[in-house]
Length: 274
Length: 211
Image 1: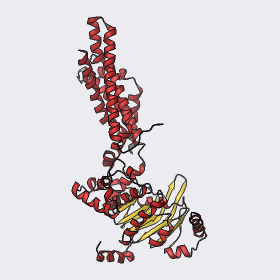
Image 2 (image 1 turned 90 degrees about the vertical axis):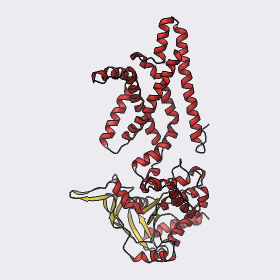
Image 3 (image 1 turned 60 degrees about the horizontal axis):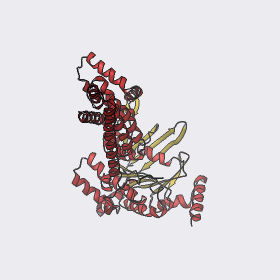
Image 4 (image 1 turned 60 degrees about the vertical axis):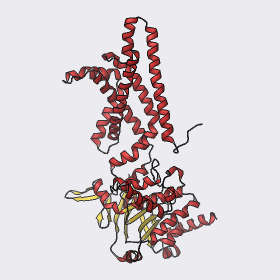
């Protein structure tokens, strides 16, 4: 990316929000998992969502991508309502086509990588370019190779996911999401399924993306990464946002008891690991 | 003459299986559809065709079609009955195969904007066939054997041919043993073809499960 472009992107954080979440509610049966979430993300901002398991952080991210159908509230992506359309008789679930159109600017990376095991690395990346964007084979492969290069996986283009390590698979998954040139990237616990020694290579790729000005929302347990890379950290517990702010403030001077406890537990565990 | 009958049986069964793959896939996606009435209709079809004997289905189709003003030779009725029957079984085989594919793969595809049709065609179906190949070969073998039932409506396949030979030679024992051997040769070949494809598709994918 050219320096001028990078500057333009970095200058943007004070602009209008690229993602707005308003009073978001989500239930699984009788269990309310999200209890009125409010969240704004500005262009080029890197937001990390942390919290104990079961706090609803993954559900929040998945609702922001409409992989979970939220019941009440709104998710606006670049100002457009995601998942529903207003009709005279109230709001209705939108058509798949419109949902795809609204979230077209989002790339998503999952905990379990979710590569397609019967396709090579290269065709995992070209698939959407070919069938959604209707690119011809040569340009799709060129674009795919550029993105594989970016995550350091170009040399594995012709191997199958089963032949790769977890870290390599996750980097391919990132390349796959990047290939459609999203303006926003969602990461749902991208390193939680990895062996500890493979976490670094994935975080490095993510850090590079952040530096280039990508808007990112990351659900993670990697506190070190959040402290280093995030512009803002959001602490969730029991379906609500308990506290949010710059990582330095949040990690060094937590205001709520719940966050303090959460950080203590985390510190004990990581020092226990040596 | 017996060889002719065997060729007839083989081509007829193959025809039914290939058509059955197509209709079985349609039915399978019907069974898994978001649309309630489509799902219900698919379930009814599946239950009826899976839950009644092939011989009865064959006779009903054979006698019903002319009533409905459709004049098909017995061979046509036979292919229709076999196809509609195997479609119901194949749909269930495919449904079982699809359930082994993690939902995350579909979510990843959705997030890339890939349509439901393309997800089914490019992502689910190829993986599913790999999983269901052994069951599909099983189903092919059973269709091939069950095709002997169509001798009752006068189609001169392997069994009917054998009966005709017995009627002129009065040597039932030898002729039926020969017919049985012909069936066996065909089913063994099918199994071998199946193993070949299993090995080819499985290359680099999964180690053989040996306990």
